Structures are given as structure tokens and as C-alpha cells.
Image 1 (spheres, rainbow, N blue to C red):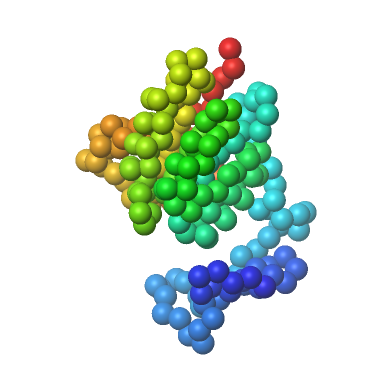
Image 2 (cartoon, one colour):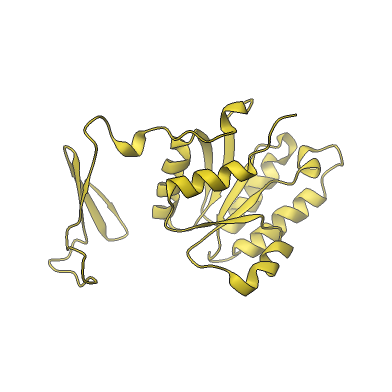
Length: 196
């Protein structure tokens, strides 16, 4: 049994039952108090590898700096990215992400940054600007100067008219919550560098 943010999940064989821990829960029509999530019998579907074009051509693991203040989002996204063969380095604040990026810069540790938009302290825009400022201060021969690290914002809403503000902050693309494996795969493929 596991418990996160007031939710409780019990696993019995091939079925996971998620409850709120409350005797009765008000939900929208069509939802049940105790949703049952089936698993495939030939092994857990959430552990199956997802092939992403381009990742198999990398010299080493594709390393992603994943930034989100919500533990559930970090866990879900980390697991999905792990199934795609990525090495995930989690951060829970914009400030810690900037520090991790700065620390990893000499060796160009990260291949991509995926970051939540709304976080306490530095939000996704502020963190993106700070990462781009670090890149701008690197020597001309540094890999990040030749090809800036892709920064993708994780969000549950369409930025619409604010898109230009995101671009000015150095954001390359968006991944929308809830995470759909095929969409994540498609967006990642777009930003994986193809070796010369």
C-alpha cells in the first residue's frame, strides 16, 4: 500500500485500488469512489519500455533535469521517462534546478530540462531565464553554446497569448498534463539532437 497527498493505493495481484481515505467522496458523475485500474497479466504495463526514436543513437543515457514541486507529478513523469530510457535528475524548486544546472554545466550533464510552470519561489519562466543566462556566460566552445539545452514547460493549460513571453524566456516547447506516453514520446523526439 502507498499513500500520497491524501490518496491511498492498494495493489492486489493485477488490480490497483485508489481511495481517498474518506468514507465517502463527492466526485463528478461517471466516477466511482474507488476506481479500479487493471494491469495486464503479462507484466506490469507501467514497467514496459517505450521506444523513442533518437534515444538509441545517444552515446550515453539521455539525461533530463525534471523540475516540479508536486511529488506525484515528479513520480509519474520520472517513471514514464525511465520507461523511455531516460536518466532523470529531479528537482523540486526552480532555485534547486538552477543550482543543479550550474553544477552540471562544465561537463554538459543535462540533455534537456522539463519543468513545471507554476512553482513556489522561481516559476518556470524565471527558472528558464536563469538557465539561459548561465548558458550565455559559458565559453564559445561549450556544447550548450553551440546548441542551447531544450527547455520544455510542463503545464495543464494552453499558454495562448502568453506564448511570446515563454519564447523570450528561452522556453522551446510544452508538454501538457496529464502526461500521455505517445505525446511525451513525440515531443521528446522533436528535441533529441541527431549526432553528426
